Image: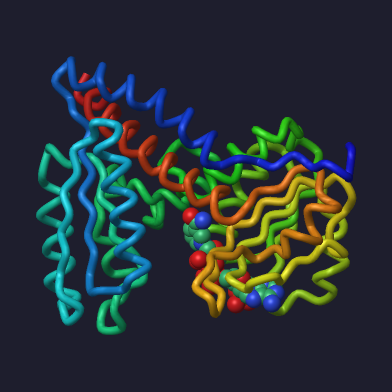
Length: 289
Ligand code: NDP
C-alpha cells in the first residue's frame, strides 16, 4: 500500500450512510405500527455525558426513532435508579435502554447494567449479551466495537488471518472487540497497562486498534507500514481540543488507513446504537410471531 497517502477512514460519512439506511427501515416499521423507541438515562451533570446524550437524542430524531430522556439528580440512589430501569423494562414502547456512563460513585454500575432487560440492552453491556458474544451466539453487540469492525471493513482490508492488536481491555471496548475480531477469523492480541514491549507488539499489527484513553500513546514508530489504524480514544487537550490515543501526524505517515479524532469511531458508535435499537424493536415482533 502507498505509505505516503494513507486512506483516511471517514467515520462521519460511513455513519451517515448507515443512518440513511436505518431511516428508511424506521419509516417502514412505523408504517407497520412499530416505531422503535430508545430510553436514555442520565444521572448528574457531567458535561461530556450531557453532550453524548444530546447527540444520541439528535440521532433518534433524525431517524424517526422515539426517544425519552430521564435526567436524574447526581445524588440519586442506586435503588431508585434500578427501580426506574425496571419500570422502563416493562414499557412496551421502549425497545432500547441506555444508561449513560460513568455513574456517580454511590451507584454500582454493575447493579444497574444487570437490571436492564438483556433484550433492551442496546449498549450490549449486560453480562448475558457479553456472554453470547463470547460464545459466538446472536445477541446485542456493543456499539463501539461494532463500529470499529465496520470501519476496518470500510478500509477494504480483510480481517481473516490478520494480526489484530487491541490496546485496552475494558468490558465496553477491548474485550468485546477481541471476540468480534475472532469471529472474523483474525489473530488477536490484547494489550493493557502491564503489557511488556507495547511498541513491539503494536508493530506486529496488520490492524491496530487503540482504546486506552491516553493521548498520543501510539506514534508512527509503533505502526507497521500499511497497517489499518483505528483510534478509539477521546481525550481533551489543555486547550479543550479533542484528540485521540494515536499521534495522528506521525501515524499517518505509516498507516495504510487511519481514522481521525474526531470524525472516526465516535459517529460510528452512535450509528451502531441506532442500529441496535432498530434491531431490538424488530425482534419484539419476531418473538411474538
Ligand atoms: P478504560 O479506562 O476502561 O480502559 C482503558 C484500557 O487501556 C485499560 O485496559 C488499560 O489497561 C489500558 N491502558 C491504559 N494505559 C495504557 C498504557 N499506557 N499502555 C497500555 N494499555 C493501557 O477505557 P475505555 O475502554 O472505556 O475507553 C478507552 C478510550 O476510548 C477512552 O479515551 C474513551 O473516552 C474512548 N471511548 C470512545 C468511544 C467512542 O465512541 N469513540 C466509546 C468508548 C470509549 P489496564 O486494564 O491494565 O488498566
